[in-house]
Length: 206
Image (cartoon, rainbow, N blue to C red):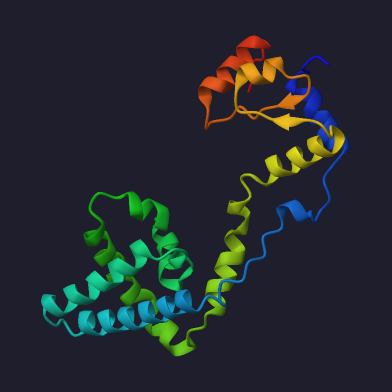
């Protein structure tokens, strides 16, 4: 079957919408049951409160530096620590956890973030109280960003259910020589993608 133009596939998609709730796109992981992670959240809160107290009383840089170092260690080494309320606050300053980790000079930026948090959030949060439900809701809210491969996985399952003897290949020559095979030329293998597009004269017009 010849490859159609993009608009043809767009029109087919409009006529056959996916279900509103599709199990392929459901990500329902509970992170608050991770005891080690919750301990890190709680430790981070303790450190931030300590930092703010020292900062507000204008005490020595030595005291602040040791606290800053431990905060830095937690937010740069602990997986999923970005679902803490302190790091969520960064978004109001137009910075994310992923961007922060790419910075060449992280500690001066962290100090500035902490100083602003101490001024604008710490007392409010102390008054309202802290809850690890915040971590779970932030994680749930970010679930849409975890769906990069969900559509691909769904498509592969559909293909393999229709063509029972089909096989997936990562080699272009093997794909050409097979009677029933498929490959996924994508950003991870640009050479394979370019071979595929050139062979079948496929052009993407956006």
